Image 1 (cartoon, rainbow, N blue to C red):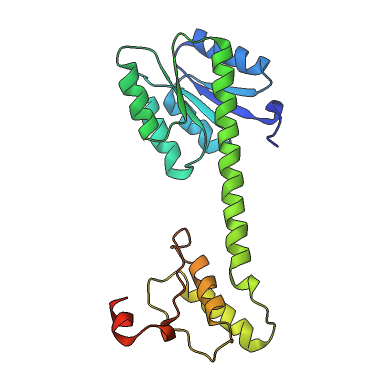
Image 2: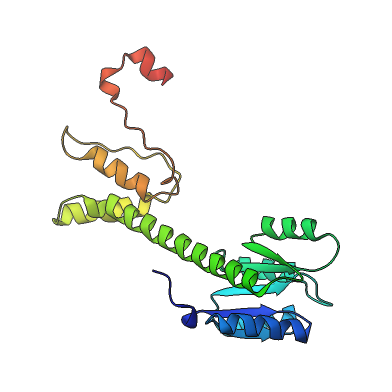
Length: 217
C-alpha cells in the first residue's frame, strides 16, 4: 500500500511566483508536503539537502533548464518521479525529449488543478510499483541463489563463498562432481547471482547427445 499523501514531499520548481503558489496550494490541498524553488539551480541544491518523493519542474529557465535538472537527478536516482512542465511553442518536442531522458510525464500550461493532482498521484504510484518490483526480484534472486542449497559444513560454506566470488565475472566456469552432487543447483545459483540473471538458464544433458551433435550445439 502506498504511503498517505501527507507523508509525501514534492519539490516544485518554476520561475513564476504565481505559478509556484498555484502548485503549492493545489498539492497542499491534496495532502502533500510541498517545497518550492524559483530556479532549477535552487531545486538542485534542495535535492542535495533532503529527500523528495517527486519533482515537478518547468522546462524553461533563464539559467539551468528543467531538462538539465532532470539529467542531474537521473545521475543518482533513476526512479525519482520527475514531471516536466511546458508552456510555449514546441510543447510536443519538449515533452518527447523529456520522456526520452527519463521524465515520467509532462504537464502543459495552463493546466487544471485536478490534472496536476492526478499526474502526481500516477507518478508516485508508478514509483512505488517499480520499487516493489525491484524488491521482489531481489528476493527471488536471493531465494534462487546459494541460500536455496542445503549444507552447513565448512566445505559447503567455502563453496558458497566461491560461488559468490565467481558469479559476477564473465569467465567460463567448470563444475565437476559425481552424479547427484548438486552441480546443476550450483550452476543455477551462479546464474542467478550473475549479471545475466534476467536471461534464460538452459540446462543441457551432454551425455545423451552424439559427439558430432554436441560439438555443433
